Length: 300
Image (cartoon, rainbow, N blue to C red; front, side, top):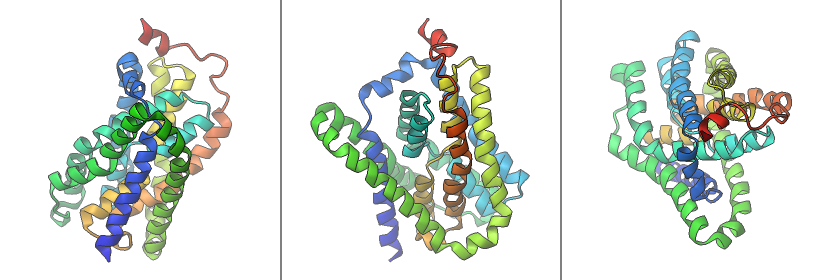
């Protein structure tokens, strides 16, 4: 039963990432080359600063070891489809958001397993679950890299098919996203209630501070306001369902018995306490001047 649930979870996550890929074009990846300066700052914020701040948050709020490892797992994951939606609602740079999510998702199978193993060893020591790096990398490749690239290929070679299924896939992805998070919380509800007083504050603090730091760092590097909004979103909105799926894979268990997945499940809710006010407050920020700062630098 546990294996069946884990398999269903991985399939659901694959569908979510496929829905992301079906909306991508090859040119979305070319933006990495066309806007290297912007992507350097974006990768600095999401791939470097986010894990560092997650690490600090775990210690600042005195997370129990397994929850600290779970928070680190979440910080290694890409933004996912929800960050792209929030970027659109916030009138941010959607093209940058999509491109960044795509690149980090494609690279996830190389980065996530190694970093997760290191963080689990650090926080859990001898109690850390042993798992095969190759197996985890392979699973991550199957549920992130493969569906994203498959979606891109379908759009590139069969655009009519991609256009026909994109709308339904996006709706399905959102529904699956909600189901995964709700099941993870419902199946571990008692454990969550017992631990929320310990981890709740940190899981509210992290998306807030990352939103602020993402914007501040972007402005310090002379990115324009729309780009800065995007980086604030990308560094604070994470792919909770992917972290939950990886946690279930590591523990070879269903959602009900893996504490490693709880931080991701809770964060998938608390991040919206930050994101929703952000949408309303910053929605029109940067609309008056869309082509300043780093865009001009990158075009030189």
